[in-house]
View 1 (cartoon, rainbow, N blue to C red):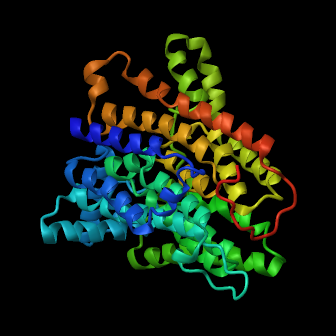
View 2: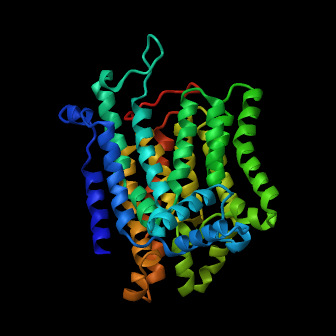
View 3: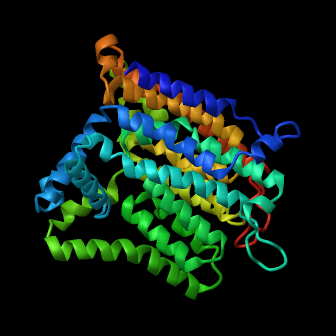
Length: 436
């Protein structure tokens, strides 16, 4: 297991050493081709995915319960005892990987991580293409890479490399074993189609992202208020929500699950409370100062209201910004106020911050987020080192490990509210990846 921690440090060092393109290094970045960046992203993730014999214990066990039920012809939600808090889509990817494992002898924990590894590599390529994807002014066709401006290629290579070597993405995909990268790829595709003024395709990709994990629904109001006219808005909502609704209805008709039990966690899952933000401070303090417990109870009782208020504020504040800027601000605003949290959620911000050119803030956030993930994964979920080394302080350590990342999120959100313009922007603006 020591090598896994060493690999994390090595990849993180590469992430930190990557410098913005400038007059002295621009040509080097411009010469860093997409195939090399994709190879770098694949190697960074595949080596620990192949050699690390574990993932987050609870999640891998849950995946096994799901795939055992699926391949055994059982109704998954009942057989998995509520351990699949998602709509019926990811289970089939898991099932395919379980079949691959049985057919080839590949360890299950390795096979189940592979789809997210592939998605992460694809997302690396999408970031590169999105940055370099300016259109030829004369004929409207994309220019081949070798004809593009060196500065544009350098920016694309730099930002894609920051994702290829991002320690949060590495930890979530190859160490934890979460499939967040699949959802992020679908959501990034929704934004990509939106940028290219393909609203129906954007809504379709968003619908698949929502089907995979429900949280991408927060992107829907952003595109809703930017579409011209109610006809286009109704169509986008119908497609984006129709995809998960139709898939879910098909599953219900085929397998007759307990619908309330099936949809309960998928539509209401809000993470584990008390391990992020103010709750991470108040909750452990209340164990030694019982007088603080009412404050903890009030904070937890207000969790839905806080999320709704943060979302409404972000939607209003960013109403004249690009969809990308608005979405990044919305995610940060939710991270500021949320009481519940899942450690894999830390990766949500990463690709969209890079697409928005927020690499400087992202570097600080990624270090703090990787610290939190490492404490949780190496201290509890993969190896229970904290309970062995610091049994009396294990819970405190886990809770407080997220405070640096949360503090950066708060500062980042304040910075964006002060500096990102609210001047009128076109419905489908082209990104300026290093403008911030």
